[in-house]
Image (cartoon, rainbow, N blue to C red; front, side):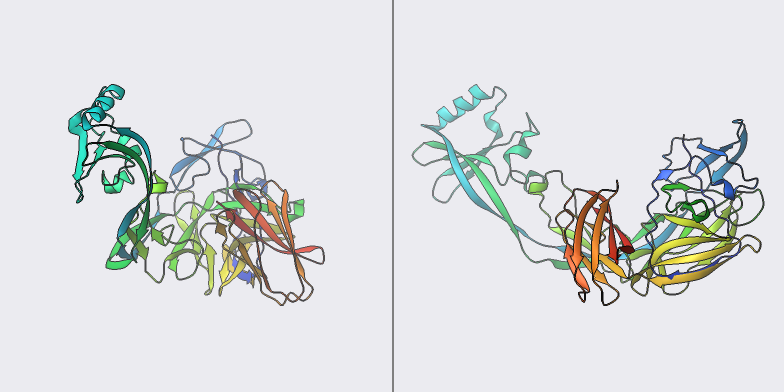
Length: 450
């Protein structure tokens, strides 16, 4: 199986938060770590020995490392079963559902009840009169529907509105047995309305988030690599100069700000395959103030599982948990480890400078973004809100590019306007939204259209 590799050559790491940079979304696993992070500067082949997807780094697995002659050089057991444990407080809410018959259309009339029964038996040999549901009306008429659960259980979903919730209360096909003996068949449709939500209590739930290994994307500007879509997992000389292998695992926390709610969404609603008839009368709302997951730092782990570096981001910076990767950027004689996140409410990228000779890791740069998008994950035909961190004195052009590099949208923002809205005209997928000023891209953000 194809394996992931990740290597970082930082021994001294200094953190710096700077302007936000869009560094790409590495989605393809590499067969080897970059050779500049190998102890002898030669490539190796990495394979997994189990059936886990190479894209799933939240599980434990063994990494098999082969040399140029395909001899097994080493087996490393990679951690993947650690979790971030936390609690969330929920508010339980209920509401009432009211169903009204919207319209009905007559499709058949029988001269008597006996004729109706005979016709049912002729058309459906398995029909039994005991399956009839008869309801007396105040005017003397009787409403008749058929419970098919004994013979054709799946039919009830077709013949009763919201059967999973209401049962046989609202038949889509029913018969009126009139006082004069005539039986008339109708097809009916219904509409549901709700009362306001009311709080009925609160509860606390224990949660877990897997601490999967962080994927690393190597961008060596000395080799002309302006962008790299492949990621790797382990390295030898990214953090030191010995032959042992290391990798990175994230550190999480709960935050009052962020992109990803800790429970996936703020309101948890029950799911029903019959979406057009899904009756929702209960819901659970997260009311914890700190309800978002954020990356708060990272740990460097040796091949034998020892933690050799445990680092927290400087105060004010939180990494985006949905970005399960970091970037290794080499320029000149310097190597940096970069994370996307936010600083004081603005999108930002944090840089750590790595000095292999000192095994120290320090933040060296952090800067706010000049463009913000909201929402970053959206449905089709939903407007994207764009705002700038400056006065946009010379005007800007917003360019949207799909994951395959196709330009799908371009919109001019006149000078002096600091915000705008735009629609993504294409279908679902990942898009890059860039701000262009004086024919140069000054900022790029990623959005996901569901």
